Length: 341
Figure 1 (tube, one colour):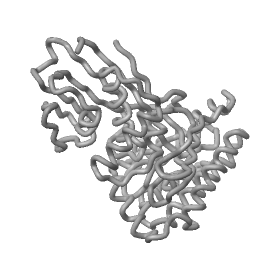
Figure 2 (figure 1 turned 90 degrees about the horizontal axis):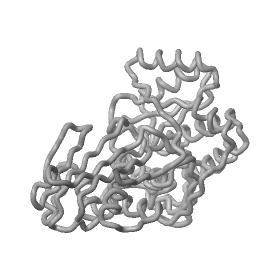
Figure 3 (figure 1 turned 180 degrees about the vertical axis):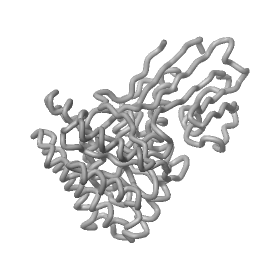
Figure 4 (figure 1 turned 30 degrees about the horizontal axis):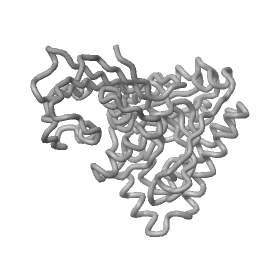
């Protein structure tokens, strides 16, 4: 293999209206979500200095960990998702290079960060191995890492959002097959949405797979047409219509209704910290709050403020004073990007 440096970046996502209906137990569903920065970045480097002789050196920068694996005998032990991605892509046994992985998004922030890691890593390895993959193919491979290879509970929306970027409307007609459409909204609506949106991390990571197990147990054996899932599907369509119409009051209502539907799925999906943030946001006139991703006892929450920027800053300061962490987010028009440096 030639000496090279390959860069890949993939966005995370927030405000996933209709989330939970993109799962195997829902069977079919619709999800609207918003791809954002902070993104995940992967850099793959191979030269005389980084090669260590039939070894791949992994630097998980957020965890301050550097370790080597043997491509001939890959074990899923330190960071299984990273190791499984290398295994899935069938990296030749003679390869020797370094992979550095980093994100400004906190681990376990319920922003689809794990999926973005898989998407960016699959994209970088595909470029290195000279494989031509579409965004949908990358998302499908990334999803298979979590479900087929690691046996985790996982919907399909996070990988698709990261691969495609933008504001995505996903119609899953039968798990795991879905069509993906990017909302083409006017620039002023896009800019205003970015201006109003805030994301707050409660300071505790969550395990999406464990939260899924609780909901599966609550729904029982016949979940496909459960009215709670039907209500979540409706919110994706309502949110799409609201954004196309530039109706932020309506979009905020969709966020609130979606969070209420999450509460009905399982009472533990909206923990005490989320409830406190929602209460404070309402006091500052926020239009909507959406618990990101699966919810539970960790992660983050998206807030749609009312457009008064001074009030938004006061809200974020008040939340910070309570020990929560506002995360700077910017809407990402693009999904996975891969290039050689």
